[in-house]
Image (cartoon, rainbow over all chains, first blue to last red; front, side, top):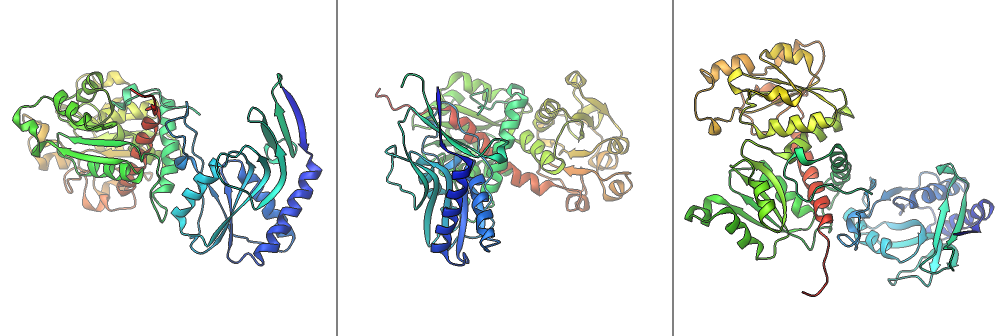
Length: 181
Length: 314
């Protein structure tokens, strides 16, 4: 197994700043916008983006956490079911601009489930997608991000690993390549 | 992630403590779902559930039905009073006929102990026991324990008292098994005539003094006297039962600590529990009902996930 670093903590810092600025450009004062972190791994990224927005003077941006387990399209097809995580959305999303936040965009199936799940909280006026890593060429559904940290070309047999200092590791993104490739 | 060690929910006896914790974790997430503006998830949209009730039920049947609907399952209902059972059809025949209509899961209440187990051995479907005679009522025990965990955080070391007609109660047996598996201490209280002879073998203690037992416990679960299952007189009169084992507000106020009061329903107000207690802040009876839907959603979801899709041509 080969572990190749795609992003260092320094480049992640630069990317997060850029993503926050792109959001500010499109969402003005965030009065109608809600950031939604996709459980489990989108949450840390969302909190980082919230920090960056606060640094730019946008404090108290509305946000929440969405778990998509009960909306997955592989229920009764996987060997073992996935554990559900907490969903915490305390605001009605009717006519709000929702921004989904996840660390890696791969097949697009989680995002499809999230699109399904979010309607339990009202009908947003629009939904955007922010992803730290966009694994191009591996999509199984017609879903593309609106804000991307970095595009990565990878095979299905490879894996993209994102680590955070909140999990007692360093901020980094690695590409995990199996030995025989 | 782990999955349940069982393919059917026949009783608490067959579940491990790990299974019970998994059901609780899943139920917590479903509790959030049923408090959303739109209270429905699509997980079981390709599953059909038959609710077979060979015995009267209000709460359990409605709770299961709601849980199934919240999970988007298709459901068919059946009650023995208006069916061909009265014409002499056997249980296996009835159920197999229903299964030929392509039903994936069966929720069954039946007056005979072991009916759910019998069915699981003889028909090809996932069986959920919604009460079999005086044997087990697993989802009730799970929702009771879940309600205690929701309020007190953990069951380990908690002292739980079960008061009433233990002899005829499937709720009591399932509760005892569930609470002991989760590390609680259990005491039973009631007339000696309504106490099964060898019940202490399960690892519980028995008392016949309500006041003393209440002083001991953190949580008291008050059960109904099951007149419909009693073939003879077990105590002289309801008035005498109420005097000795009925829970009243002055009794609760006189205790040294505040305890939590539970009741699986249906309540006989003024018999095992006074109206003031049932409606007081001590009581979590209505929380139990809400938790019931979440627990049943979790059980249905986790069992359905074990029933894998098969796309191979026959």
